Image (cartoon, rainbow, N blue to C red):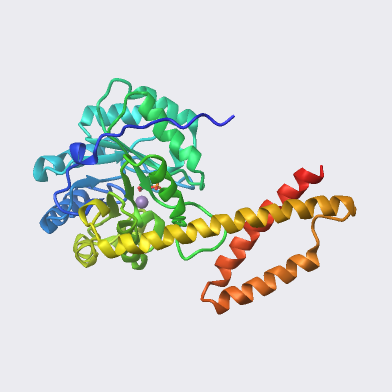
Length: 362
Ligand code: PEP
Ligand code: MN
C-alpha cells in the first residue's frame, strides 16, 4: 500500500547555502584526483566570483570494477584546504555510514546522496539513521530510474531522522533507449516533485543529464526557466584528462562563460504582469470548457458501453479506433497542434474509455 504523502518543511536554502551570485552555483571536479587538481580547480573557480560551494567526489561509485574509485579520506584533506583558502562550503557524496563519519570528522559542510544510493531504501535508511541528531544539510539526487515515489522516499527518510536542511538534485534518469542525453531529464518528474513539496529546493545537475559539455548550456537554461533553486556543474582544471566523466566536464573559465550567458528569469511573485493575468483568465475559461466537453463525452461513452453490452459487441473495435486517430490527427495538425500531442491525448482518452466500458459491461 502506498504511504500517505508527508509534509516536508525544508529550511530555506539561503539559510544553509547562501548564493554569492544568482543563480546559486555549486561546482568542482567530478572526482578529487590529486591535491594539485583540487587546489588549481578551486583557485580558478574562486577567481570567477560566481561559485557558492565546492564539490568533489571522494568515493566514486563506478559501474565496472577496476576503474578509478576515488582517493577516499586522503582527498577530504585537499577539500578542507580549499575551504581554508577560499571559504567555499564543501560538499561530498556519501554512500555508507563510514563515509558519513569520515566527512563529519573532516568538517565537510554539505552531504549529497548519489543516484546509485537513492535507489536502495536499505542504504538510505542506514545513512539517515547515522545522521540522527546531526545538523548537516543533505542533498538528495534522484534515483537512477524514473520513480518519483522512490525519490520522495529518500527525502522523507532523512526528514524523519531530523534533517531539515534538505534539497533535491535533479540529475536525469537512465533509459534503455538511445537518447541525446546521458540521462533523460524527464522534466515532468522534478516539476511533480516541486508541486508536491513547494518548499523543497531543487538543484539541477546539467553535467550528469548531459554527459557531454555541448549540452550543458541549454539544460542549465531550462532548469532556470523551471524555477530551480540552483545548478551543480562539474568543472575540472584539465577536463580532457579527467579520471571520471571527462566528456561532460568544463574548465572554470568555460563555466564562467556559461553562467554569464544564462538568462535569469524572475520569480512570479517578484514580477506582477498584467498581460499575463488576462491571458491566464482566458486559459481558465478554455480549461473549463475542456472539462465540460470531456464530461459530456464520457456520458456518451457510458451509453455506448450499455449498447455494446446489449448487442454483445466487443469493446475494442479497431477499425473505428484507427479512423478516430487518422481524422483527429489530421484535424489537429491543420489547427496547429503537434502530431505527438494529439496522439498522446487520444491514447489517454481511449484508455479511459476502454476502462470505463470494461467496468460497466462486467
Ligand atoms: C557525481 O555527482 O559525480 C555522481 C556520481 O553523480 P550521480 O550520482 O548523479 O551519478
Ligand atoms: Mn561525475
